[in-house]
Image (cartoon, rainbow, N blue to C red; front, side):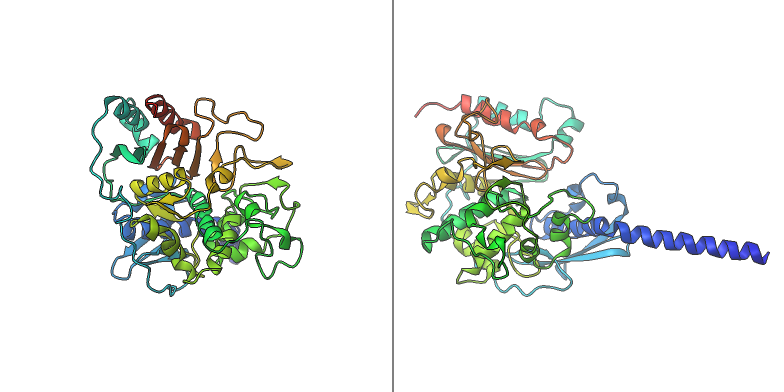
Length: 449
């Protein structure tokens, strides 16, 4: 019996040890899940004002094991696996949104942003146009079954022509006042923030020596190369165990410093690879030049002059905006950003970007080797460097911001069109979003000037 008992104890010890070892092996992924869930619950509750944060969790085997709660009085949200493992907490600050951190960060008071400079903020609903409305209805999946529409996940569409509302529609539970997360569309807005300072401070996009710790080859990386994802820094945008993107977003208090610590593996300017880290390095550089706190820079430099009163750009625990990923705004305010780009940075008759900034920023990047198709300086473009089109159904001058889960912001200068599409479409390939088709149909319906 003693032998049997010892065997049982040994089996139990091995089982517990195996479970602990398995947890520590999987901890980076589990940590990613709880960080994602805590941030999501906090932002959906306190920024979007919704009570269904679980509706924004992706289809993932870990999701059924995530547990958590929102503390409205304490303005925070907590998530863990099975109530105990890899617990993380996100804290909310008015004007700045939610930050995953070990303790509540001190961010200061946010600059108040009025909606007055934005004529779209209180514009009346557009007059019905049967053809336009039919195109928008297809983008919402009205011709599909209820289950297919839910999978398509379109939550808001705003269409502008000549700077005026042409069409607008929202899914149940959403309206013109509901901010929605743009994910990587924030990278395109970062381009606009850089342009603001290039104009105001007469800076050069060829400036290098952007980080004091860059004393090796990294000192040659330029502002333009960070915007165009040609820095040459090692990166992996795959959401998996211990990859740089998951480590940065959910385990690093200073995301830019972490991204900047990556080794260089290509000569700057020769290899294009999509990198959220590059955008956060870029953002840390431009905010460091500001006369206001880093966290407040987007509000004073961009939101206030455009009247983007709904916009919230969330910071990391170091107090810097997460420019790669965490910008919230209503679809009308997203469309306003597109209209600002369409007007080459002129707003209310004032030039806020260098003349020709958007033409240069939406010219595809020429490099020896690229992993991306049609990526320019923070914007995706339809015209490749060889003159061929990424999507022949769209005008060659079309360009767009693109974000995770189906976020899109299209600008078509030749058709005087801006189209913002927000949604939650984790199960839909880009080709199935119906957004390209929507823009194609709207271009066909655009009368000549």
